[in-house]
Image 1: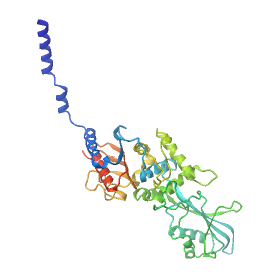
Image 2 (image 1 turned 60 degrees about the vertical axis):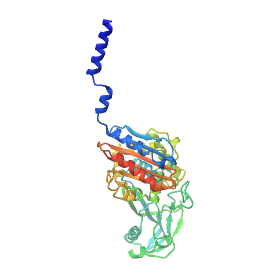
Image 3 (image 1 turned 120 degrees about the vertical axis):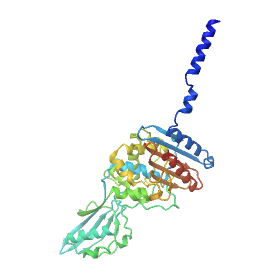
Length: 399
């Protein structure tokens, strides 16, 4: 009996003197991560997601912790967020100082300021080539003493294969034509800038044909544009032709002795996927722009690619400024205005019928940089999905 009373007394002293676990939980502060998860869990309960799918992954780039994830490994169509994978692959493989090059030369001989032969312009899939570049070519002729061309203008498009469209592109979509030389005023207008430099072109119609190995081309010069200049419209304006141009630069770097093809680029992208610790066999890469309905990636893949880019300064230096800024420019100019995400979120948007996606970077309220991906699939009204994604970004940026 005495022993039992002693035990009761010890229990009472222990119970009343030590704070309970429940009391400690009530007084401990709620962390930013806990607030964020609770808010995102609430967002996932809205009616939009009763009839459509969503995949989200958020990774803290300071701690490397996955702070939020739902359906992150489910394969979905990325739409134009595919451009992130293309850009990172290109920057990793080719570098930010890479130049898109159009080469100019001639075949034949020059006598008394007359070129008896053909002027050859070899397209390098430079999407920035324009009228001012044609004038530069005219200046090359002037500098070489050529005043008259008694021959053809050969538009050499052998840099790539002959396919004009990407795998899985819809016939009724606004698709760019995949030519490695596109002069925006049309091929018939190529000769017009040349007389301004004092050169007369006897052959008025340019001829598109392949290389002739029996001919020797004398190089007159090159017209080039840098990677950063190409990335800006590709990412901020989501220009598909620019994205496919970058895709085929990747391909050209991998093709040896043969025209570049999409297959060459796909292999390079797959090597990047394997390098970041995922299996390329789990995904499908069809093009560089995201136009294809055959592309299948995951929120995890896109987030891991963003993480890889962030940890490689030579890549992130060029990728980050190319991304649209919420409330400021590009395809995010009118989104997330007057919210915590405005001016904070840098992300690539994506839109296809039934698909709305967003992937990029932001800084959380605790000062930690985040990489995130949101893919909405099966949505009938794109605005509803964009509003949902904007709210997710606001949660990631607010205290």
